Length: 144
Image (cartoon, rainbow, N blue to C red; front, side, top):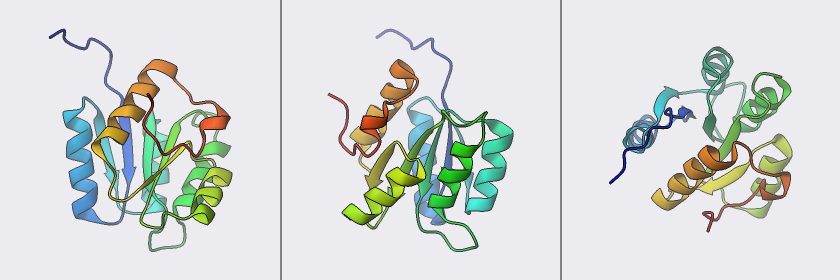
């Protein structure tokens, strides 16, 4: 098996459920990413602006003054982060949630529990394409 010589992707997880966030982080590390985990939107934004991650997995509903939709809008408004991949993670898998997430700037929307194949597919897309096209913004299916 050939060793992957590409630099590791840096992922930021913004999730208020600490067990889920740690499990997600461990999985991303196994898949070759470096990871930061933050427990609320404000801390997630601070780390995003400091570390400039390749991709952000963000819960949509978190306690506090800001939620995942706010995170996406602020990241998209920052010139250094505007092309960062944003993946919404939500327990509310409805057409309305998908529409709001797409409008806020998310590239993909993954319902909880997130499937291993979805994570693998988005990591491969980031590595191969750099950015998704706007027509793929709400795609929840793994790439073929």
